[in-house]
Image (cartoon, rainbow, N blue to C red; front, side, top):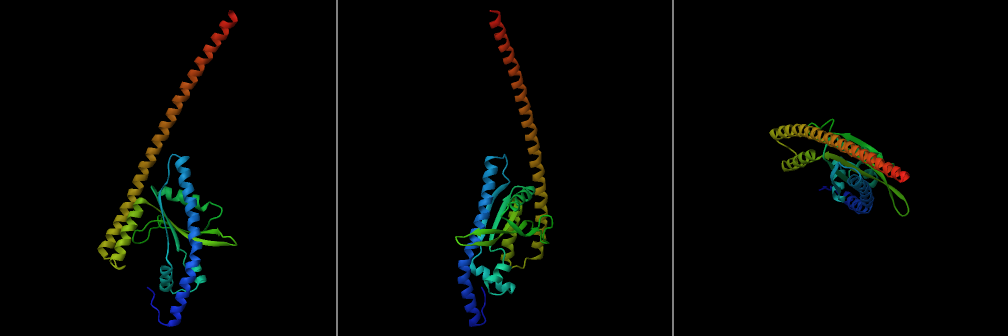
Length: 251
């Protein structure tokens, strides 16, 4: 909670909280716009393609109090303009994928959409944090069309594998259990676990790629077999028609 030193600051915070409650609908709508795009991609992969890279999706919207606490911690001004400029993770979406390559595929599909602008891009997979944290972070800007105007909303999108999500969830619980002061032995264990998870992701993807290759080869063989059967059937049909036609002329 924010500690207020004087009445004026308290009044500013109360007014800001009221204004924020109205203002946050833009972030909510922006988040829904991105979620719709993700849902369309999921359905496309489900009905058109043989493989869906998106396992599941989570989304959240910060509360006005949470935003004010962050403004206070970072020392920003208690104004809407300051929040809009400095707090870019009010709306957040997390996409969970099966494999590391899926992360980059899904992110590319999103950023290539015409109405989305990438404001910030941080790759903690290629360059993990010192504690071992891995994920792809993006701040996306998207227009929100209201009845009388167009507002721009910022949405933070995190994309990670199932294994990365499991590690991040555990680290988060430990982080707050020890009041942000994690013992050294646990810090080392978490880093080791992150390294092992990275290796596991790599091995699982190698197995997946091998299975995809086998499926492609088997499908090619089946298709070749079907074509051979069709060709043979066509030859027999043509021969039979020729015989009938010949007999008809002779008679």
